[in-house]
Image: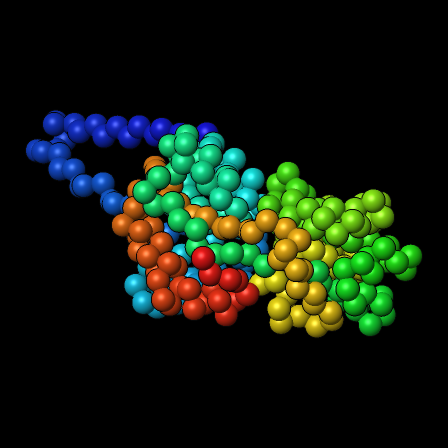
Length: 254
């Protein structure tokens, strides 16, 4: 909910000869970016490189794409939205919450299955999730996280949904799905390759033919008071330096 604060300044002529007012300070030069949870690692690097180049610090607010989109609808003070899909961005563009001219696909996500104790569980390929010794498989909630929706699409396309569904435990976002596996509360987790590419255990890159492309889009929040800084961040991410960081961080490029 947006709050409007009225500031009244009363000058007493009997006490003061005059009343001078100071111009209201402009918006902070720092930038607030709402970013899908799968971007946690790579955007840490993007933020450092962007600040080093421009001098503008960036604060990242991570969460599931659907939850962040809802916060923007409710007036959250974000400057730019980097989603894990394009549908939520396009919906906010249609409602004029996001600037249509700034909309762009910045990365193609890669889905992975991470098994921290791969040798012990015997999971060497996707179909091994049906094995009896596999108790729990972590998946981000499909109604909140595009990667969760994609994970279920993969299991259905591979003909494994009927046997794996009873083992599925849901997390709020893709980062939490990873944490369920890391803590031992799940034997395996469907997550973004970018979040696990340097982790121990077994990492299975899911065949991209099993799911629709994960096109990740961004756009600038229409009400942002930091349009100049937001445009600079957008240009950096879509430029050579940003694309190099994304590629190194486990993403394909559009």
